[in-house]
Image (cartoon, rainbow over all chains, first blue to last red; front, side):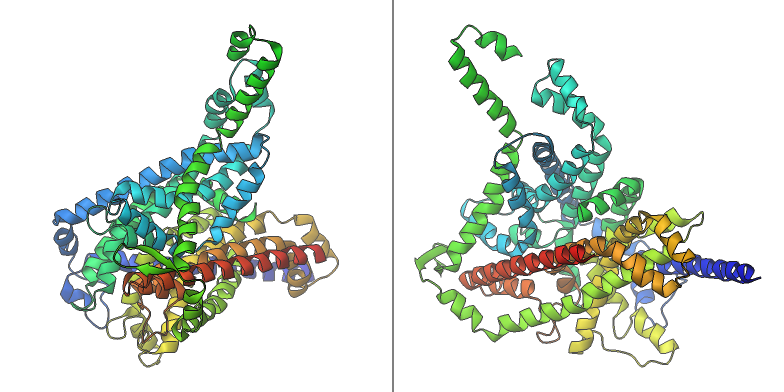
Length: 281
Length: 309
């Protein structure tokens, strides 16, 4: 009898957990849903109370912004910078991660710790001097400047994650390759990299997302030619003179968020793994 | 192997040194790209910032001028606005971090109930996590708008009068905490679900057989096992949260008045609005040192916590 009550209580508790879990997840997604919904509204349907769920779908906000050549240009900038900085960081960071995981190097561990410590450096402490140096060298408003600036936080991240991936691989693999006549670099390229592809791809994607979203460096180091979309969005959100332009804000927000969400969901398994490893290892 | 055959004609000692040297080069060549890059874009700018912080900034050459010792530091340390921005940052951290951790682990427990949709629900929490913080600030600015925002309308349904989310200093602080919690709790949820799944089942079974109730199991069994993950998550979140900038810029813009000017925003404004580069550099270095010290303390505490068990 008592086990029956126990079991029933357990079942009830279980159902409550399942239902509230789904509700909480939906609650967290709601703001994004609301943004996408608002982006398809006309101005008259946005500024109403009570808020409208049913309305005439309009693409005005998108058309108005995407017709502007500068916005397309900034989207392209964002892609160039995100891909460029992720590529640069994955190459340099994986090699360094491999060095930390597998190669005996006097002093390398100290360098590794130093690089990890850089996570505590406030970006503004880098943005101010970078701006001054870039200005002096005529490098402001260039893609390459943002790409290397993003490497400051991407390389330490990649290095640490990839170190974990490499440590998990059996050591015998490279030893066999070296016996077969591979150089150290050859073994890395031919054996280690192909085996770590899942890790490399997920780390690459996560790096790309971080670069895609970055605001402070983009704000400081660009002013027109290399400006990225987050700067545009900050501009729209902070524009108090012309009043709240929610159509533009939500349309640009949707354009920024949707591709990233799709990519992230495609690699979700690796992404979660990467997050967990990056935190606890 | 290749250079062994080539160099075998040379005297043995040269060969040995040569091999040792080439071996050393090949070892270090893996670290080299990172070292070069980070020296150029991390170490050098930091040292330059230190130099600027000890100099009078020359707006003509747009670079550091005369050496002025600690006077920039003294100046910013006696500037109440700097202290205010630090206080604002600390208040934000004191609310946002514990809420995120507690909520994140709580939600993780709830969504870990085994059923066929569990992994799908977990995957949904990735979505807020990849919303750019500046977009998150923008969305919530719209939702919390006092006149047309969804939040006040919903509150109105349950009889709560319209709140001025951006006009009242305390509510504005609540606003940035809410946005930050929304953006970052999913991160904690994902880490916590992984941690909860890896807890050993037999310990819980033993606790159940010993007649421990739900509350006892949580406090005496689950929490102690989770301490390392809790501590690690807290430290990672702390390192992220001290960098708070985007969300404030896109939502409250530091207002009303200066009530939500976090320290990064203040330094940014001093540098790029007022062109006070020396003072900004000094403040940035102070924040850097403070962050390192507090991180060190947190790491020490977490190690001590783990030892206690």
